[in-house]
Figure (cartoon, rainbow, N blue to C red):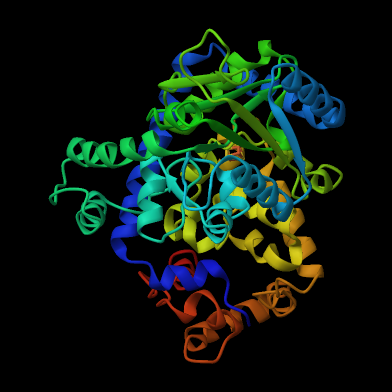
Length: 455
Ligand code: SF4
């Protein structure tokens, strides 16, 4: 039997990684709950309304995208359409070639869409020098690692590991003091901002009504990436659209509270176009690249609601599988309950259908989702689809179980034989218990106790 990603990683993950993830996700979960409670009179009602707005977007995506394009163009923003990752990379590399010679520095703000299309690799192949400027993404880049959480890319690392990486890269003397580490990164990245010709960002929301791009952040690197260089390129999944300006405030508060437990993030940028004649700062050109990459296929299928996602990461933080296995175990750009649905939906059940197993189906992900995505029921659908496609094999011989469980005599005999089962070859040993010790029997035998005391 093919070993799932989760099983393989759980065997090899160092303990410190799991500790880092558990402590950070627990912190975010508590912060989310506290902030939601004091931010909204009725958080549940707000989530229902936000889900309705996103459903409206999915129902009217074509006209809204056309409206966004027209408004962006009226604002002086160049709009590009990319049907897949290859087209998006080509569009961005072509803009870079028209704007700066090979070898030029490109500063990048955090963007899961750029991770999705593996943009850095394509920029490097074209001869450019992309520099991640989000602190977490910067650590990922210098460590040749990949992000393990959509909001906190280095949630799997601790301070000591970051301090060693900075010392190795010559950013300064070894220090485990967070402020000193931040200052070391700041000095290094400030020089990159000053010399960069091009800045690349993602998009949190784009407003169809006004053609404005909205970016959320806490570090200020987004601001510098989008204003210091002469050219700003923003990459956006087509579902990130909001119909009206009036929709934005509630989404800004839902995103901040669900992601990091903040009422609002430290910086909210509303980009309405390139620098105007009377403005001191800002780029000469702004490009918006609209990425489909099979989102239009997902809209017409059974996993449509996953496109409501606003990438807050709350479902990752509460998921017992994510907390134990950590993000790299999923083997995809998007991890956790979100990734377990979005990955197979975007890339195919044949390729990633086994991710549907990475859930206890406890329902915590749906409970915290700010746009009420029914993740558990979609995971069940995916499991069914993956099973029918032969991607997931039945891990437990349920037919045999049903034969034993539907007769009292057979059940009693089975229980007597059960202690011997751990010494026999067993299908379950091919998966989970291949790498783990099954728990020892504890306490007394319940049936024996019952017979002794109730006869
Ligand atoms: S699925 Fe919901 S909870 Fe998970 S990242 Fe998306 S919006 Fe947040």
